[in-house]
Image 1 (spheres, protein in one colour):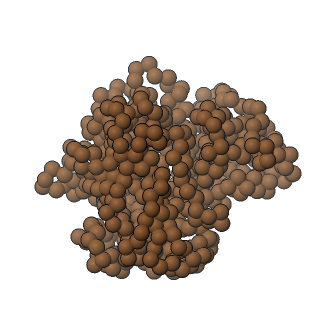
Image 2 (cartoon, protein in one colour):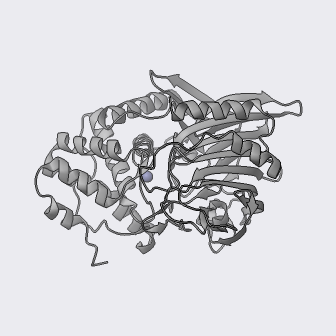
Image 3 (cartoon, protein in one colour):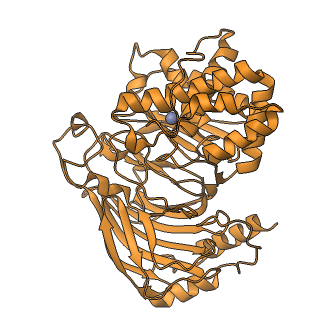
Length: 488
Ligand SMILES: [Zn+2]
């Protein structure tokens, strides 16, 4: 029982009641009354703590104006052990506000540049209106009263996000709304302060904690949707639109694709359902991709630990600038990969790389701004491990030259610099470690790392400590050859 029980209770209450749309203070008190008391002992100083953080969002997609009207009710608890006088959120849609700052390549603006962003009508913290400051992709809230340690927090927001005509991880093209990082998300606060996201042309400049989600999406009936989590209810309205309710437990983010004329292929394994979503006219072999996806999840589940969610979805979208993009329980792949003559090996590699992120990024989180090598290195190396096992070969870049992995995204000068550090360098660290310790021991390292930091955020220090424990010999020399904190 425990969390799961309360989660189901909350969902049941939300679905059976009509006040889901937030209407000011009156409904706020009702919503607060449905929350379980936070009766779990404080174990860590993580904030916002997974298991105590719930996002309830109501979303209405206007396809004509390409506007997402949202209300968010976020409830959590001040678990950081300190008084909080401000709350910082990431508002990624604001990265697309002007042509000079947008992370998307110019070519992705197929209809020319058009500004996008998120506007707030009202923001309440603990039922009182707050002042807020927007800066880059950040939103700073200054509550009227400080938030004491252990105090419950309810943040209510009414917002409106413009979706640009843009083939990117946030944008619209060819009847497809790609909604990655579309909503305001509370940043992590820990002993190093607020982990602020920033606007970067490359990489994933985020650091997120896991949370629970109940999302109610209103879209035209002619459209379908795929998202993080599981659909628990679909209600057709008499005006040609539909309400879809989705729940997701312990996920690091929540992404949605709303699409027109898409096909889906689905298969249920013992523990989870895998599905592939692609445009109707795609004639690539989705069947074999579905089988491959199942094989990939099985391989990683057996090697590292079980896939944690009831569903895994692969969606092909008109996205440029990325071949693939990972979110919890769902990945976006560029639909370019479906064109006739596309490199099948590359597609398989990308599928495996993005799926590996379900473990490294999703299950075990990391600060992708400060330590991007942690998830990217493991995703790349994991993808090669899968392909090598499947094809009975030993391809892959194997142990390359030693480079300094102790570099932040901000200090990387270019996309190439980022790839050669976080991806190639990160991958080489693991090939090198296998050479040092052997395949079995590295497997043990990752199993321990996963068990210790499941649904949390791990640092390089945490990982090296696990390696040291499992190695049963002094690893300092190996570590020193990869982490040079002073020379950059
Ligand atoms: Zn990746």
